[in-house]
Length: 187
Image 1 (cartoon, helix red, strand yellow):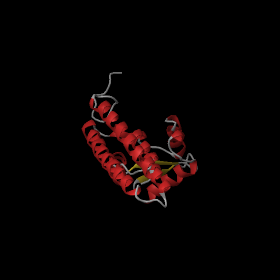
Image 2 (spheres, one colour):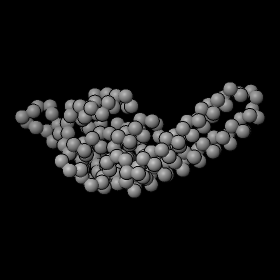
Image 3 (cartoon, one colour):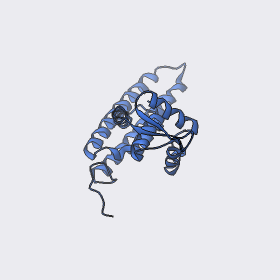
């Protein structure tokens, strides 16, 4: 999965209508450069590709030569939610995909979000247990004993991810963060 695809769809969805510069400005306001490697060219390429796939509708303006505005299509809305759910439930994604999912998680309702993170936690715990079992098998191998450290690192990473997910679940369950089904706040 591409974190860029998820972010482009999500930001266009959030803004309603967006062009490349606006999309870049919005991501910069999120300080996205710190958690995803996204370039100007990636944004414009992503917008054009998603329009070719029918996930975005492109509109050009005669009064602004070279500017194209984009809106999510019904297929784009479906794809956005598919990618978002997948980014949050799976334990085997790159960190930038999870980061994109976290940035866009307010689009989901609390109960669904809790369910997705429970799935992620179960996968992480299963992965950590499997890696611990692999460590026992690696102990028997003398020739490449140093490679055991790769499994140790992966096991610790899975355990740390599981602990973070448990804490996030606690925050979500006590009502932290505004989500799609929360009451609007008074002005």
